[in-house]
Length: 432
Image 1 (tube, rainbow, N blue to C red):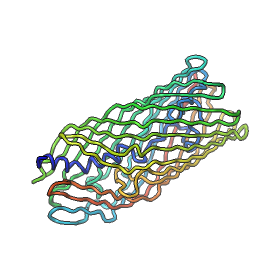
Image 2: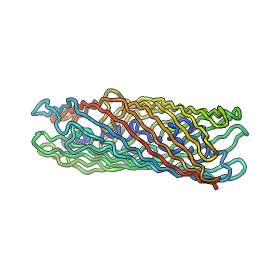
Image 3: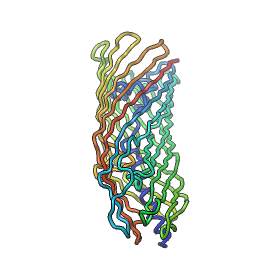
Image 4: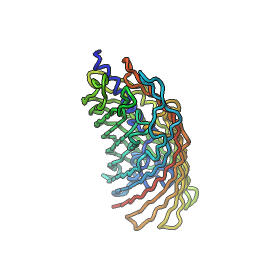
């Protein structure tokens, strides 16, 4: 390999390694797909009925009488402190020094605005068609240009839009079944700084952008063994994403200048499968108890392959499968008002060793309350609020700029993250 190609591959390695953490949403799977669901901490979605539950179970629309449309909007406000605890950089001429820069970053996670839409229409006595638009992986983190995280993470932007056509039917009087496709558009943008050989020189810059369309599938069922009990299960496939875009490196000086480039590139990775199991028990005419368990196949996200400038870089990952559990209850106060509450435990798939500053995630507990107001026989208004507590976590990502060349520059991040979030959701359900 020529010197210039070696430096190009090595210069962009830091940013490409970071793509893995952002592109998989690393624990930032967006479950805000229903305002009604948020109010009970997502404890009853697999067993719910109607268009609002389409993301969770394609069988949910099988009992729609004629037609239904749902529209929701969610505001995710996160607070986090990301603190340097001794990060270092090893330059060829200076040896080991502190990475420098601002040692405290407040609120790098930007406020998220998540809309969703779903519709269902009965076709005949047995079949119902549905369509949902959701954003299951959608997140942005931004650090200052002088942040201690700059060589591993500056801006991380991921947007995934899922278009889900669905067909559901009543297989028997007590069993509903549904199947659907997940047609997904994904866009990612990642930036980070690159060190020049001398700390007296300004940093270089690396940017990766890409987008693409890919397809997965989903299937689900709801069973009613008695008039008071509903059991449900659904499965959403892993999706292999192929993104086409650009890799840009600029601002490198001296012997590193040959690595400055703007070239096309491709990235390939997989997002996880999701298996959901739920139970709903009508304890009294007014009180309903709910439970839901989800298994996330994050181990599908085993590696990122990035091809550019005639070379391919493969980055292995250490994500692990996780299981979330949620419990909730609903109480009918009167024919117009239903109140609900729930609690959820949701562990992070990110590794304890090597966690990235791009997605400073941790195990979380979610506490939620909400209500529904039946405005009329054809229209319902939903609202909910949740508080999310994140366990304190450690950022310990290691990166190497210009690996495999005489100018190799190891970077070791060492930091602590504390945080929490509040989510507000509203939704409207219209039956016609």
